[in-house]
Length: 154
Image 1 (spheres, one colour):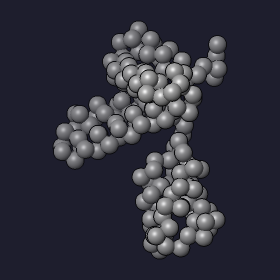
Image 2: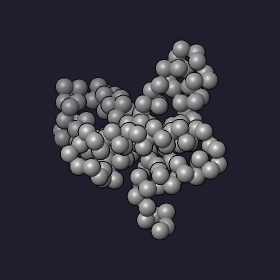
Image 3: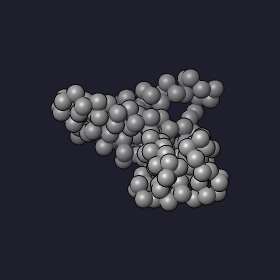
């Protein structure tokens, strides 16, 4: 089977085995934690097999957690721990779709604002709902929120 034919979960399994063979501790620990999160997600849901979308959502959640933890460590001055979190984040980003730039996000949010007719921050919910539907998986919700808020405040 080629790499393109492997499911995301199969790719993670394969990469975990490779990390174990290469003694890559960061990748090994990160991928093990993802597998644990996937197992928990499968047990908590009604179905035992997760869809590709479900697997991607778990990886995105894990990446977001690493990103936020690294920021908190940096704020506290714990650079070594922040670097560890960022190294794990780099492993996870390998499985995520390419994230859009701020300019690309802004263009989409501007289109959503025009389509919804939103003109004030009170309509933020409607804008965010439509924007996140289009940007799911390719943009961080926090960034989308900041851009939408800035555009609606203008």
